[in-house]
Image (cartoon, rainbow, N blue to C red; front, side):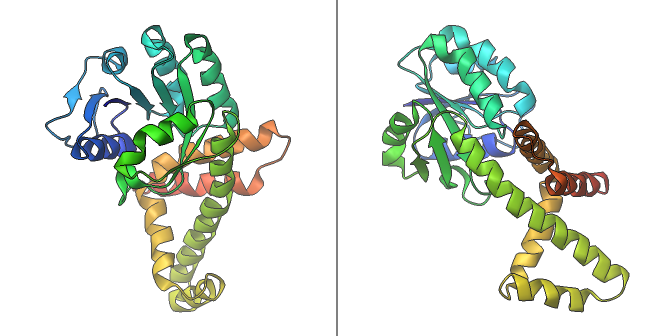
Length: 255
């Protein structure tokens, strides 16, 4: 099996290394890879070059580049290939990319990453929707990946991920602000007790929320951009989701 990873950032580089360690032939392309890659990974000269010989193509770029990447590789797509759109985008953006590629007859998958990629890497739980979802799951089943196919059209997996993000990123924003306030008033112990009483007494979870928000602020800003876009398109004023995005922007600015 040959797999192309288009975008070797935080998630893409983890996926590329893990797939290579599973014995899969991996082709990759990124103008600026984020971390060292396994020596077996074949670095291509472009997205098109990486995708040409691949059975499965993982597009793991920023949502702002996702349509451009799809158009770049479209000439070599066909019904025998699977195109997996992993970018954290709104359902409408996923549908737009599907429409770009639909005439190629490629088996398209809307794949949503449902948890932080480290520490599980390619074994991170994911949801797959769209016409190629079942085929993707079947082809990757021998490798033990945690991909679940769900009934629904392109955009459904993205929808579920972003609805979940409203909860998790919103809670993280409140916890971050509460901890900052507790420190400012010299009442961090008291604030931690209040948070702990709500989240089931898990002190470690408080630190994971805070540290995760700080470490992954830039990526999560893009995620909340997608949430805000999705909610606005449905006529909802995303007050809390926008506030969660602003909290992440603040954390990124203070890094």
